[in-house]
Length: 216
Image 1 (cartoon, rainbow, N blue to C red):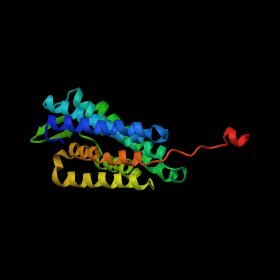
Image 2 (image 1 turned 30 degrees about the horizontal axis):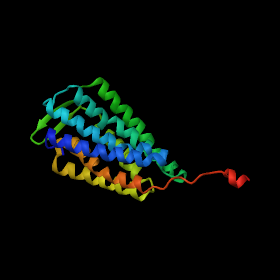
Image 3 (image 1 turned 120 degrees about the vertical axis):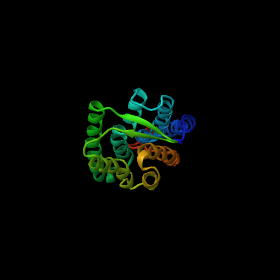
Image 4 (image 1 turned 45 degrees about the horizontal axis):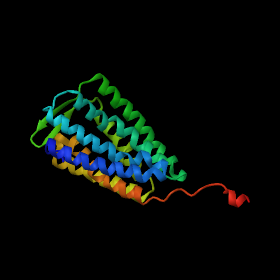
């Protein structure tokens, strides 16, 4: 993963297949669909990075598409999806990660609209550069929205996913500081298999109201 165009393409196809299976499993619980589709999105993301490899990096359409999926989209998607999936009793505490996600996604979308994101092939990884102002603050908001919403979900499967993604972030910083963004997204994609098991273990919601037999 992230070591070549072929590795990204193969891994992306496998993760996208896991995401497709998650979406099928989530059909019985529509509120889980946004989270179930996350592995599908991350798989497509790795496939897009294969195109960045093939193009030799630079600032082309593939690089911009990669950055859109990596930056503003998860910041808004993940906390909103977690909010949809969890029980009503814990939704209030998820409003903070959601608010952080809205503000962070807006800042990142503005940066992508007004600046040029570039990709540079660095050995067996890719480094991306956008030149974000107040980058530290944006990073805090990004992780509060994504990892924070998972850890605050109160669901053991989602908490596990959040812990694994957080560990992936730590490892990426320690080993590939200059190519952190690319390697962390790859780690998150691999961890997304946990979401498929989470979706598969969810029970269909109990029907509310009385049936016709009850009324009779």
